[in-house]
Length: 357
Image 1 (cartoon, rainbow, N blue to C red):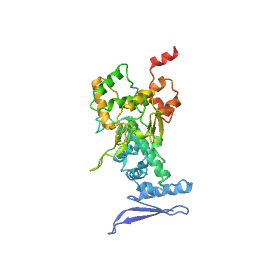
Image 2: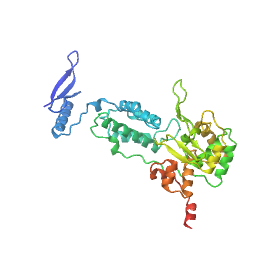
Image 3: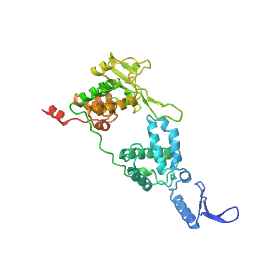
Image 4: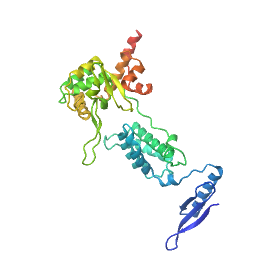
């Protein structure tokens, strides 16, 4: 039986009720409540769970807030992940919206309200409503953090992983923007006029190889107080390029694996025409600089709604149009699954019609 006793302050005034449960085979359970009825109800529930063999130790989950769990996840897990730095903004969003909740109080209803509120929130950076994909990434991070806490850090969650029972936001349809007839010529002409002399060769190389921006160019992270911006990726280095074999080695890619990219004749010609940088970079510029120059070039060329990453879409689709099979394309682009590859592939109906002729 549970023992319920009044809790007194240093002046002998009752400030609450303490319920204490001692049962063989279980750790002692102690919890304080404002009202005696609450203490009795809690004790009755815990004793019933012990008798039925379904008792879960709640102490740590009640004393650990989501803010604390995410702090630990940021310190111990994210630094070990490729691209873990991108998760930091998601951690901050979750801490701002749900951080005050204890893990025991975090349930599907609370998370669903967070989801709906985020979907109607305007981003301070872009001025646009937070996208469904952004919220989906945040909830995915929350699920991984809770799973790590339950499976490896010994924090029992009474109701299980609450994110598993809520509906994820439906992401927007994948972009299908490709270069329309005449746009490539106008884009390259505008790139030729750019102040950044690296822009045109970078654009051609991206279309020929399907490589990501960070695989081609040096990219930088966010600077801290009084510290320079850290280098996130070095981009393609000359020491990893073999012009005779027509291949480029990428020692570490977004998915955490090395990849060897075959180079087309056009890609090789682009590389041969480049000056050699003392620092070993193939392209002596950064993605941040190229991005700004690319946006301006698209504006001069009269090309709307076309992003630098769309060059990867364009390249992947062209690989299929050249007759390569899905496995061959995956080996070039680094996609791990055919489903992922499909998001980057947009074949023109008119080109497919020619194959059926």
